[in-house]
Structure formats: structure tokens, C-alpha cells
Image 1: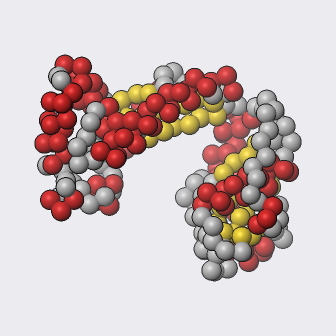
Image 2 (image 1 turned 90 degrees about the horizontal axis):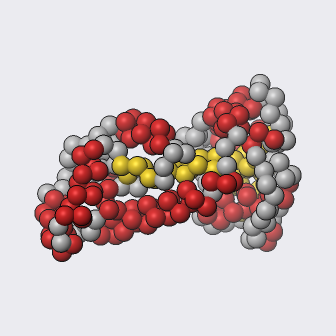
Length: 263
């Protein structure tokens, strides 16, 4: 497939369920992944072949400068791998689009398409269980930041407000198609996020607890706030105090977490 054939997504309106799948197409958009791609392809094969799941892997080499294309070509000698190449780097969205176009063109009404990162951070061993479950799931990472105005972090809060309403709409829209959606809204979480974002490091809840709450709520409710204290912080102020006052109060909290040069 050439670049000229990868600019249109073909859409299917067929009703499909994972349990009736005939074949799994794994789409891997790749850019300079010569080291990560071989072990990932091996993991895909080890996850699907013993389970007797027919599959095909579509690797989209997005103009890599290394031997990504060679790694995909070599793998094709011992497993079903198809290489699609972009002559130049066009970005992740374009690579995914190309891969989905190729997969849709080759798939039937009951087949399943899986997209994964090619850096070997997504475990293919989860695919058989997802097929057996027979339903899809989308977990959107929101935040209590999206429940109130957040001076100094206004853009971040706005994106999280979008996440909430987008996810809650999808909860209704996709339910009949067998896809559960939940928006999980934690407060600060103890990860490297604060350091990477240049914030003043402050305490947060454990990521494992947030994940547990999200999975427990999946299919039951459109959104969930992790922890009663976060729920109180996100809801009480907006319900009990004037909106302007909430904004000024939030600014004081965020100022304590934001370095002077970032304000």
C-alpha cells in the first residue's frame, strides 16, 4: 500500500461482536522501533497462536530512520506480518489512519481490529481475554480539576471538563454496541506526572487504587470520582459557594503547587 492509498478511512456499519470474531488484525504504527518491534511481534504471536486465534499484523512504518521496516520484514518469515510504509514521517495519527484503512479493507464483518503502540508497552497477552469478554471498554482519565475553575491551570482543567462530558456522552452512545465507558476522576496521583510537568511535588493517592475504582465502576456508571475527599473537594465548593469565590480559592491552592516562573 502506498501513501496515496492511505488517506481515506473505510467505515463499516456492520453489527459485530468479539465473541464471533473470525480473525484479529493487530495494527502497529511504528516510528524508529527497530529494538522494540521484534519482541512485541513475538509477544503477539505467543499470545494468539496458542489460543488458536487467527490473526494478521499490520505494521505501519511511519518514515523511520532506523531498521524498523527490516524488523517487520524479517518477522514476516515466521508469522503473518504485512508492512505498510510511509515515505516520510507523517505523525502518529496518520500512521494509525493508514493502519486502520488497511485493516478495514482486509477484514470481514465479524473480524476484530486491535491497535497497539509499537514500543512494546502494551501487553498482547490481554487480547484473548478481551475477545472472550465479548464487550469493549473505554476508560477515560479525567480529573476533579475538570469540576471547577482552576486558575493557573485553566487549559488543563478545561480539557478534563471536556473528558467528563465526552465520556458521559459515549457511555450512552456506545452501550447498545457492547462498549462500556467510564470517566475516572482522581485528584493528585502519586506518579511522575508532577515532576515531568514541572509542578511542586505534592502528595497524591496511589495509582493502583484509582485503577481499581475505574474498573469496578466500568459498565455501572458514566463517571466516578476516586475517594470521598476528592468528591467533596470537587462538588461541595461549586454547590455551596459563589463561582467567583471558588475560582479565587482554587487559585490559592494551585499557587502552592505551581513554581513562580510558571504562573
